[in-house]
Image (cartoon, rainbow, N blue to C red; front, side):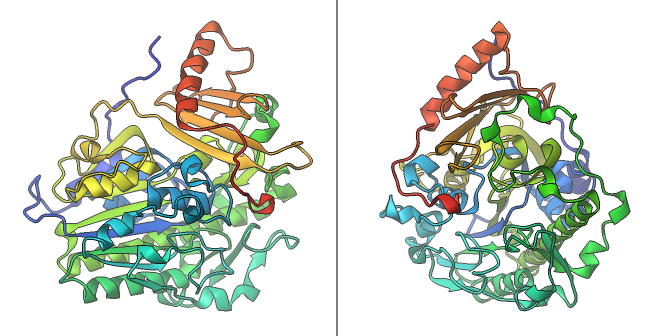
Length: 494
């Protein structure tokens, strides 16, 4: 049987509706691309209206999707902040840059790497960052340069808002954990502009205004919805707490899943917390998503007001996916399930023909770097691992046959006798995952019949599924190693 299948081209209704509301414009822009607005969110999963979430109130990102291409099946390379961000900015997979934990810098392994923003800086563009693009310890490092890469920027800005000053007001559902790792939240008083993310939007707008007459690459990195989930109170009020529910899963969902598949930072389902507390956290997460959406809206409005919208490439991404209780109690990140591997990717490229069409093809975050370079009309460096998505920006419905690889390194703990590398590959139909190259477990899920990954077909597989696994294993091992890396790692920071 064929392993890869061409996907449906049906657009998501909200995109079609919003695209009809946009001003009429020609298929091709009259102005060449001159600038890049590069927007990142932290720990944002696919809880967006444009990605089909019925609860999410995200009008700005829905508008961005309607004016560009929303990639419905985009996958990060590693569901952990530092390595994912380093991979995006270098265009290289984790095995090449040697980054698997929250401490190591990619230049320790590839000192001469030319980052995405360096491509622009070397060509005379003004390059600046405000907020979190490379890794920060959140919230402890807010207001600092974090784990930044100085050669990537002409200027760096590190706002520090009211959310940091009011950490003593934050509710921590797990007091034995720091608020950075616990389910923690605050419905804050005051305005958006007093919060760190509001200040980041304000700074990015000022940079665009100041440098509007020269080519620029401006990166705005928002800290939410990373824990603690902090947003002004009015965003909490958008979500009726009484209408929220935890994700469904069969009672026996975990019975056929390897132990290694569950992250070490969430060893107990739902952290052992009561449902009422979990629903409070769920409301706070969605509030933080809407807060970030509002800041993106401010950036998009500024592009319009400054007359920059039609010559500026806009890229929006999150570093990885995020769990909100799936599989009977998984929260946060560090998993190779669909909810951990899949994350938002929206690109608005003026002059491309596919604007307003939902793209269901499987793409990877290492594709972001070559796509941006290709959109500018430059030669794609041989060093990058991804491929340009410009053809999909022109025609999101074309055949693509994409495959996406995501991996994660587990530390030894009371569940695992030694470190275990997990590697997963996603085709348009299947997800296949190996832990320690299969020695610590195998998973196979058919997304045509089981999109929530409830049934592990690698347990007593049929001959047909054995053939599927054989094909996917070969593709996976060409792209990622299941061996324990030889580079230094800090187990407490995995």
